[in-house]
Image (cartoon, rainbow, N blue to C red; front, side):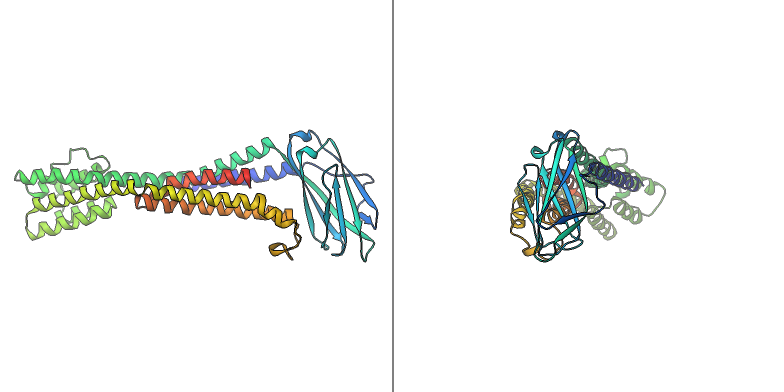
Length: 384
């Protein structure tokens, strides 16, 4: 129930955050000099649009989205925003749009967008709409922090629950040899096995204590030994404990040296615990390698989105850009969204794999998933 509530709350936080962020993005508007219903660029002429901004120095950047309703692929439109480097558009079609990103240093309180058309067949081009979007540094940081908080609310309880279960099981399995050792002492003292188990009910075995007390109570109530001990193994949900219990029951039924078998089982479990510790120390380098691979993955995505894809977009409609109907900036925006989803997916699976490698359990990867998600999403939001 708590997990369901956390998913609802976290998802609601992220959803509201996205809506508020988009609403803040679209608070700017273009003011035409003559305010025409439809903006038309005639052949060889330039059209200038006034664009007023409040506190432009607070904006990290500004994005102009220009949508065309009537234009041919042979038409070339040159965009000039203040003193920003002119941008030439070609290969446009009716219904397509172009996203123009303006750095903060080129923004002023009063701005001018100039558009010039060069035509091969038609003598005009019609622009359906122009919208402007921009965010301040505070808006972007708050958007990032709220999203991270929403993710923590969604996956935090799940990860915490899984890791607590894993930690409890590890403590339970570590205490089981101590329990067997105490039972062996009772058997060596001449007690029957059921009485030796009952004699341990007042001892403290950490996470194992409630299960020992429950088994002892069942034996006192007259429940058959095999049934009580089998239920004890099932309740612990530990494969190691269940295998040990099966061995004990078989020895008890065969009438063999129960004390000797219990001592051998306890010694084996101690060896298993020591091997686990040695495995953790030896596999530490593998865990570090997993983190390094993940950070390399993040670095590759950042290089792609910040350097490689923008340089490809300047070469025109090639490769993945060909026939997309989107401008290079719009494609970069699409890639950013895809890359961020990839970061989330990679964080989850890398964390689980690291946990499996380092401690042999997927549940152990819960803490690694939390760490990688926090780092990955922060990098994606800041650098992508």
